Length: 263
Ligand SMILES: C[S@@+](CC[C@H](N)C(=O)[O-])C[C@H]1O[C@@H](n2cnc3c(N)ncnc32)[C@H](O)[C@@H]1O
Image (tube, rainbow, N blue to C red; front, top):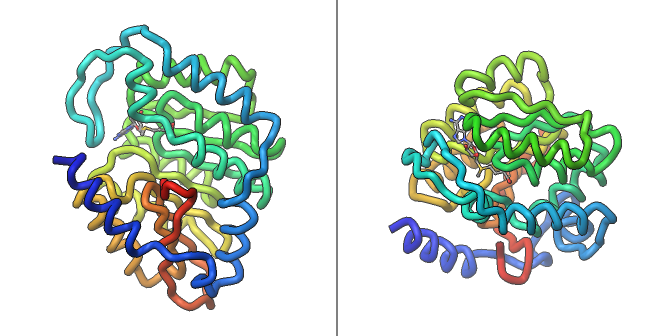
């Protein structure tokens, strides 16, 4: 059911997505051309992808608790969990390039998973500091192992359900510059986190939602987020939606491909 929904959503996306020549915002144009579609490689990429390869082949059985949109707690090999939850290499690299280019220092990741994307964010530049939230203790333990491998001092992993941890995290970190919402993919939760985040955004904030076409519920949330009066520009990359609050800009919604395959 979900697979069929996503396949149809992807076909709709391919028809609607536009080329760069249709982008009239200089900010979006430059970011798209210089960072999102660039083939620049960084030293860290290869080493971090080795961690991805290790995770994907790890056969340890992990007992998940079953939270968020993933209600069932089926024990699974770690490799399978990594395959299902990890952000793609393409997107991890794009996040790295955005954080590095804009020298973003305060990063909030809602949904750590096994922590590979967190590592990309933390290694993008020396000033980057990542607060990352995870509710499943077994998954959080795997993420910690990965942070240990790279000896990071600039990652804070906050364990607990987002509904319980996010308000306090936002009190302590009132203006994150780069925010990724990647967990609990239900309409209600996505809209609730969006509302909680709104008082903490400004003209320079990057707010990113993962899996905006994952289900009809997520597409509904994405549609409402786009319509919010504080939202100025959005970019739908199919896999990921980016939201900007740059006051004085015309409200515009772009649908763009992040790579040749669109994802
Ligand atoms: C898709 S994964 C995150 C992937 C990660 N950002 C990456 O790119 O590799 C989502 C994570 O959010 C966690 N999660 C889902 N709902 C949650 C909730 N309500 N509270 C806390 N954690 C939750 C899940 O346990 C899962 O590990």
